[in-house]
Length: 314
Image 1: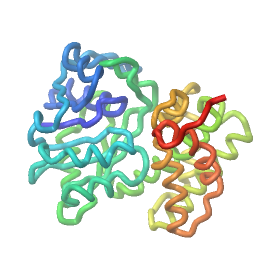
Image 2: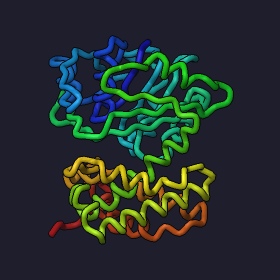
Image 3: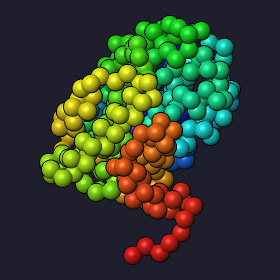
């Protein structure tokens, strides 16, 4: 089985390295110093589940990879449209494609430029990041991937992929019968934690411990739950309580990727997280005042990082 990982950061680097160690033919698409390190030194993984160093195949262009069985896009959400446009050299008639981006719109973005029957729904859970070129640190949460079919014409495609990737050490892989619900379950946790964490710039252990921030977090989760219901997504009634339990079990010093991007002045996924809640709320006529506040509060820094706004920092 040939797998291409587009975006060799915390998510793609972790799962790709575990699959490569298990003998799966994995090629990473990367850029810059990270690409050079992957080519010359391999990929070093630091994880509480076991450190590793894997010699990997890495390319800069899809043309140098050729057709594969599975493409996993693990770029930032705002990078996905451009990444999707460049996939065609790796896509054959039997290729499956999945985006593991944060947010709820990855499959729709991919289906705009690729045959919809080949696009799987997918989501993942992990706290991981690039510590240095060629080095991925897994900082917490059991590394988990959910895949599921979205097209009736290719029913069984996700099951075939899961069967071929099953049993890899360090990866919990699941076939989701309702993959949209799994995507929204993560969204219900991740969008609130990212928004509140980015505004406060404190770790998750502080967010959950202070009654005032915990109340805001719970309210933001309830907004996503209500929005999902209005959009026809079937989430369990316990979803908010489950998400809070997940928060309580997370590492004390854990932070979201968006929070770290705001901290470091990098482009952020605000539009695909808090912004998506606001936009979908308008469409579904669901009030989301907490997410509206989070989005408005973070928007200037988001625009600055994306180069659409300039101002003097205090």
